[in-house]
Figure 1: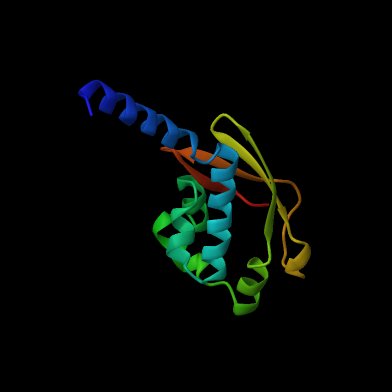
Figure 2: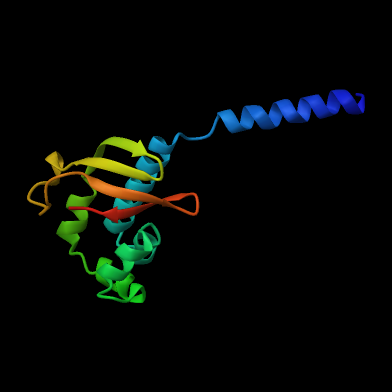
Length: 131
């Protein structure tokens, strides 16, 4: 194969690979699902890594280093209920996303009203607030 043909194949392959990536809405949804799964699994460190820095600090009572301990403190019943929370919809606007969660199957899990918020930090979607 000539160099020119090889270059065309490589450029075409790179372009095709870029087209197959997740949309921002899908990426935000995946990040929220991963956050909920980490809490369900009792993995506070993983859950905190999926939080925006300000949220991790707030949960850690002013110190993000305390966040994993706080999130690992969920009871077995709470973790089971969190595992039933589903992402209903995601709306993206720039580097911010509004996520509506469905608590229908989560029983009596306490939660606020309104959508959760996410922010894109260094190319990764992070949970900012869950009412």
